[in-house]
Image (cartoon, rainbow, N blue to C red; front, side, top):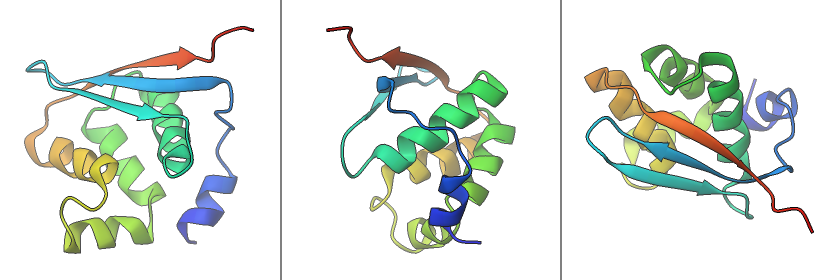
Length: 106
């Protein structure tokens, strides 16, 4: 099953503005709810809701969810930063915290 098929089985993330991530040494990353990153937003939302943090178990599951994009990220470091982060977490075992930020109410 490819990424599109796996993504179809995840809950929507339309209610989110972004996900804010923080690494154990103060590293910061943001996944915005915008075209080009909405798939990553849904994957990370699912992982945060299931695992509470992006730890090695969440990273391993996320890499499976990203399917064919994981192989592309391994072949082309830097092309998929949200997958690169999961690969790094899996390699170094350092968990990242995450905060789901909802869309502003009108």
